[in-house]
Length: 523
Image (tube, rainbow, N blue to C red):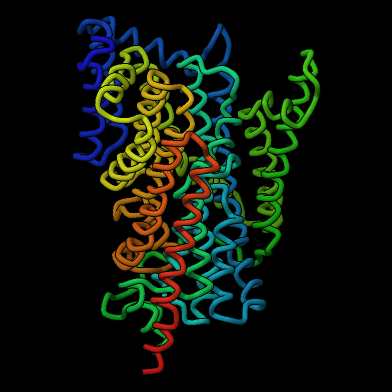
């Protein structure tokens, strides 16, 4: 059944189940089991052995610990604990109080919120909740609606996390990319280098960030957003009073009233600094044992990303614990920080394990080779990035999970590229990443969307309806860029084409919507 039409059944079933049930792990599990059965001619014993061998390889490789995979998992758990202790120490609240004294205008409140969303990039959950808690007092004072605040938070969280290698998203994606490159024997580019090269191809993320700053500066309010912004400026009501009380405002963790800006800033600074320093150290160590010259390029080509993330995570967690213990919050708060931090990252770990297994299964089935044959016959290869961008967007919208979309769609895209034209590997993977974030932004059942409205203190349905026009606008702009990228093979051409279209759309929106809110307020 390898390399035939039957090879698409396991991933197709997984996709359909995700859409139908909105449950990623069972759907991936069914795809894995069905694929293993097909590989082993429906032998239950052979299938169990197949899955066991793959799973064992995730943890143990060549007779020793599979350090790459294990370090990535440990990093995610450390990151969860670090974000919990930052919250408990009161760092987020202190940062907001500090900023309130320095932000004087409505435009400034929105731009500062966007800047917070960019610099607090280690995890989208942490971003959504922390930026909401930091910015809400500032935006409320300047009569910025909670719907606008939710949009700014949501449209900086995932887009920033997905282009940062030092984040939970970056670690997760680099891990999947590493598996794809290994499975298809792609040499000459490491997982980290591939991730960095894909950043300028992640057109939706880049221009979603650009749109946030444009909207914040010119106060452009599309469709439903105008209603909320007009009400906020005319009455001071940042929420729709007809919808009742504000949804959950807290994370459920205890919070110190002695928090300082340093409680938030230093753990993040130390995480970033520690990770970068160990990337350099491990890269130099690897290059020193070869005939290659020690240059910045060779260092980052040979760096141990997983180990560097682990060491950086330990340093960041250690720093957050230092500030935590100075607050004398007690053993109960410490235990809750550890438990809740780990629990917050377990879904990511589970999806990652299932995704690694599915990569091996569909690689053995030759799913991509069969699909590549169809592409050769019916679809010009130049359309691939655009098609995969839209497909990933639809899947993420229907399932509410960008991470689940990564787990299913990245291996499929990698298979198609490897069998059709390996030079398209990075463009199609980048298109999947961008499409997943786009779909996630539009989905009312997305955890990031839910947490963004929660962090902002906004009614969830208001956030969904007001963000949708912005997400669709940026997606349409990015689609043009993916068509150019696909037919030219040039990331620069794709980026420039997208920038030109973005500039045109920005000019039209600015001309059409600028000052509408002000006019409505003055009526």
